[in-house]
Image (cartoon, rainbow, N blue to C red; front, side, top):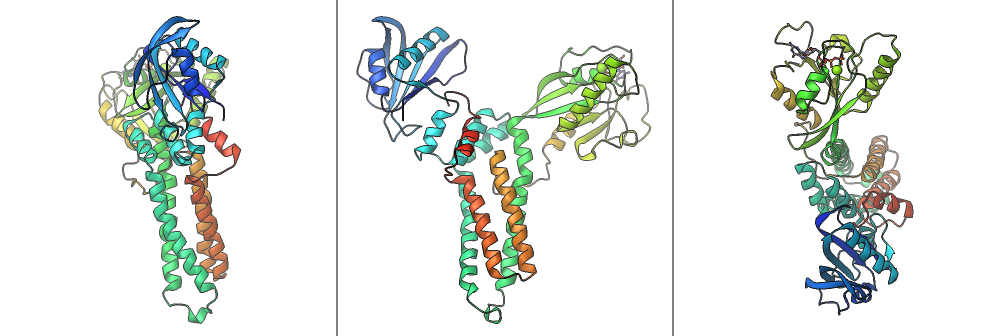
Length: 430
Ligand SMILES: Nc1nc2c(ncn2[C@@H]2O[C@H](COP(=O)(O)OP(=O)(O)OP(=O)(O)O)[C@@H](O)[C@H]2O)c(=O)[nH]1
Ligand SMILES: [Mg+2]
């Protein structure tokens, strides 16, 4: 494989930037740029960097030997000064010496291909980089250290034992089966079904923790949506007037709520209108309701029956001057700041169902979720076939396929499309 080069730190100016090279010719390339022999492995060393015999920077280079590096190949990290001119010069000189620009995620892809990490650990690197909350970082870090692989291993070991027992009993007539065999098998399948279902449900929570969530404020004109938007995001971005129909476009602000990254959106007031501009604002508001994780509705449950109850918080605003008529989850005054803490607690409770138990197996990617969903369908099938006495061969073949799907979450799969879809989500230099 050719040697690759990329800057691993974000673009722009910074105190220090790190350029990474990986492949069999890294030593030769760095010798050329530093005009010195490469220092011993894992020994950060200060060197001068040369272009055309002229020094253009002083940098620390660290060499990692093949087999002991992130990628599993010879790897060198150059910590240079974070000026794009310097970074580009190092990359250009490396390209002139035969390296190629790394594709997005290529360093991690090589680590996976060289057996340094499994596919689920590679996915954890991506979710760790993108995690938007403390818990999201912790969950991704756990999986990076192999927690997902270990918890799946436990389930797979049980599954293998059951399949082996099934195989053994295939040749035994039904009358000669141990009396507890079928009831025990059903218990096992029910427990497996429960565990996998929990993991799939928990995925939505981890998605919010790693990718952040969106909250949209809707309601009739003049209800105080923009006032609430400004209050929650501690800004003055939205125009507030007592003229109904003030907000037309969807406005967005980013906030951090108890460690969860949220994008909060203000929308146009919902009412019957023929005004073309207002109609467009209304259409946009409806689209936002569909795409958001939580809707804050400044209206009663009775007036907004079309909104999904599980995703909506019904709020009565202007409690400082009016009394609510109808059913609401909470009374607030956005203007005076009354009960705002209760509102933010309700938002985080709704986002992370606090009654939800953390499952044994925590997945962090859509690909892993797809495999678990297929496994769940197969387990349900096995359950049905067992109850309908369709024969142990059929149940065994369903369980084999469950195992295959669990395997695909953690072990090497050769399919290029899967690999590319996993690694294309990385940034260049990782
Ligand atoms: N007394 C009182 N007035 C409020 C409260 N919240 C908002 N208002 C007032 O209600 C009026 C409308 O507020 P906005 O925040 O612009 O309402 P909106 O829902 O965004 O209105 P549109 O953008 O037109 O749909 C303004 O005069 C606000 O000062 C509140 O809690 N109490
Ligand atoms: Mg408004």
